Length: 292
Image (tube, rainbow, N blue to C red; front, side):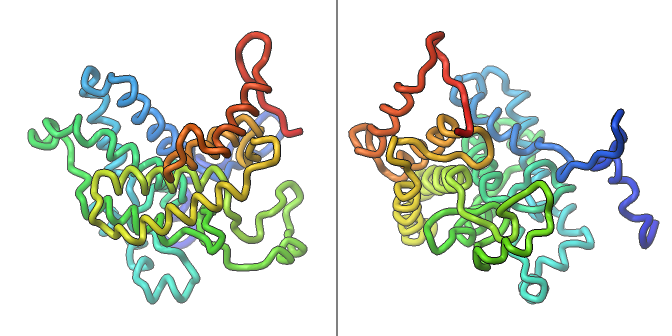
């Protein structure tokens, strides 16, 4: 198909008719995001060596999903727009090496998805070596890992934090022009505790394994990121989570981000966060979430 017919096969990924009318979603799923967390859980629970076939399948999915890093992806018509002059023309951030929220068909790199994808690939790398040697899976090479690091480093904002799709390129007053009826704070991309944690932990884990690659830049990024994470902590020790409700959730990202940047258990910010979490524990031993 050509022209308007080309997007037709993807329409069902985003539109569907419900009992109360036509619906639309902004993504074609959350596959890469979910799979990255599952991969890390598999390794941390010491099951990656037991469920070797599962580990290889996850790794193969991450290989296929990394943006413009396979020969098939680079053969696509869209790859021409990854050239620096094309990106500059359309004010687009670098895509090659990042990971998306869903699948390679989605194709847009996101800071936290790239961070979690990178961590998942690193975590699984030791467990899939037999599969790589036997030709069952394709290796996510060091060069490709470096491309992911490049995407993350270039997404750090002047405040030391990380936004979602691009750097902060505008001003707060742009929100006065927001045409959306249901979303606020969408006219420019802001730094978030969640995106910052995922990006910082990925840089820290990569640097631990490959300490010589862009070492100075990574160290500076981690220091700037730590200052940003501290600046967001609320007086009660919590962090505000922007992508879910709300404070216990946000505190998870805040603490993990600080720890990845070198904060220890006696750090005042970590102690305050722990005190906050203890104060919010429910009678049944669990924790809930609230936007208030």
